[in-house]
Length: 125
Image (cartoon, rainbow, N blue to C red; front, side, top):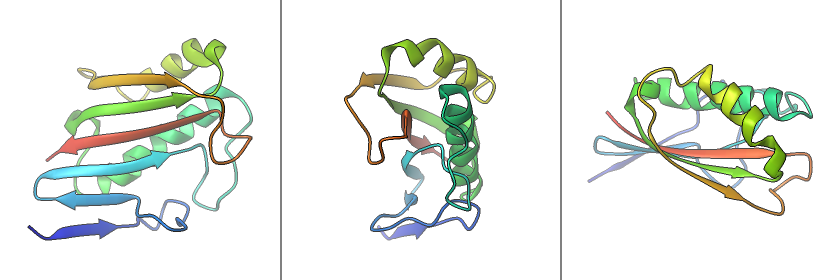
């Protein structure tokens, strides 16, 4: 099976990885952070970053003709336990249908110290 690698132009261009890999009808989306397409951080708070994360996931899904209804699993990485309620509030603005399977992991840090959240996703189309 051939793999299709996609870096949507409306996402910040990655360094050393691919945003979206499609294998048959399964789509793997690399961890998304709160960066806008120009590379700037959407904000320092969990709400702003999570909102941007889900905009990025939406753009990644759209690049293969999918939407959040196609997401089967997300993995969430948070750097602050107190951010869980804010993360959920922002997530629920984007994921409005049946929720996917989800794992939330609290970690000591992400690739950049200002990142508070990162979310990766798997979808089936």
